[in-house]
Image (tube, rainbow, N blue to C red):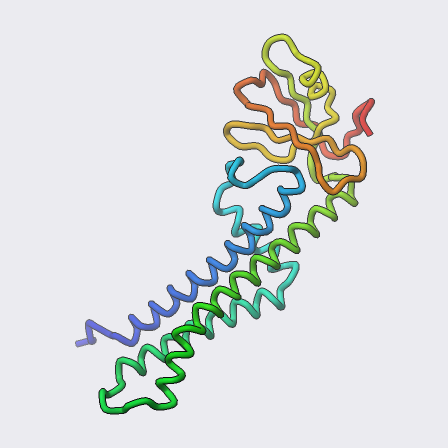
Length: 220
């Protein structure tokens, strides 16, 4: 009859779950930092927009593509730190009372205080890599004239004001959209900080998204 309870298999499953959770947290941190610093160039804070959490993992993989060596180093260090902590915990469980103060006792104290500090450094490193990648991505978009963002025409409900007439010309580009707002910007001038207009969808009558690469008369 096969053994019903296999502690070794359960230990391996817990190890995989813990390491996967730590790696996901590091990638999420890198992706969040990427999005925060990228959209900051458009004067938009992440608390003011609705972004699905899955997108932060996608941004995290963008950071991984830009800095594969450093991201792998962080992830590998995180896994090594986990196994080191588990090793110390197992030794504590198996340690007898009369062992006294040994080299292991000092190593345990080092792991107790140094482990969280090292883990914090890994999160800071991933955050820094995400910030650097986000800033570099904005510079690439600016150098390319923001060609990856489609132009958009917006007609508001009711009598259009001066701003609404500008939106209807099609010179603005669509940065992103959520369930409540459209975020559009005008790529005019060589600046590191773009001005973004937030258009509530409840005030919009019609939206037309223009094909990529299409020139609009009167727009640069």
